[in-house]
Image (cartoon, rainbow, N blue to C red; front, top):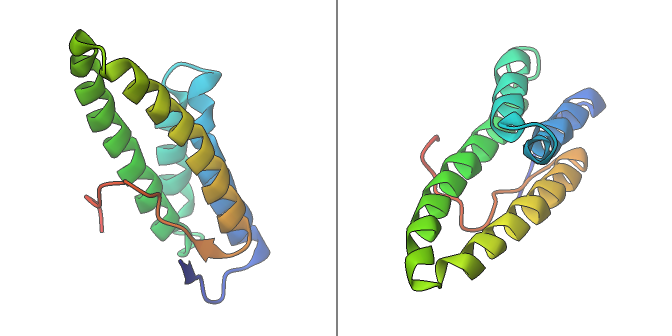
Length: 118
């Protein structure tokens, strides 16, 4: 939980939008995958602090894909069903917490997220 030094209100707002855009997948198919990456890539040059948030969100997207694939296979032995439910709940809760923290100027790494982009 690092305090993002020198972030403007506009940077914090875009970081919040970046986290909240993960929820776009519940409205538009693949929206939760495409929107965060687009926001990150289009705005990271204008707002350098957004790069850290973008990497956190993309790491979470990759983690959810991996955890989802493992859980889908585990549905054959029934344990995958509660794991998929828990993953869905975490995806919503983490995006909301990440957006709130980003608006406060705090960089928050999602618990359980694999760190593939540094």
